[in-house]
Image (cartoon, rainbow, N blue to C red; front, top):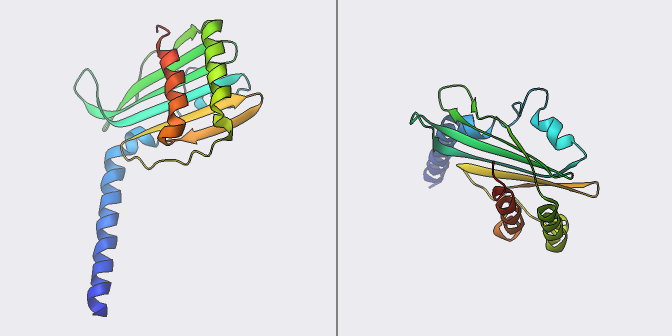
Length: 177
């Protein structure tokens, strides 16, 4: 009886290790490398540390292809500053190649849109909510809000927290790149 239980435990451990290795081999190119430079002289970490950054959104998926039909991961990083400056960095990372970055886009968000975003952040009380991360294997979302000098980060937030970020991202998407 103990031999069967021990054998089952060993088999489960082996299956979990094999699953983790497969996951790591498939998705490592998209999800573990999010700190490459956004543009010359400005890294993602520098942007996130900027006290004027109001909102940052980073998303990635491990199941994408590019115009050459190569398989890999894709990513998009968005930075919205309190002065209305909007920066978008995106690209593709093939499984067996180097990161292919799109040109970094910079635009200005109108003050009316900035007001809507600030109002939504304040009314949502997101800075006070507990938003534990969801476990997602093939994609991910990171968000950061810096409101009145208080920063809060979110990783794969649950649906009740995700609503505010979708709202902000929709406003940002309405600004033409």
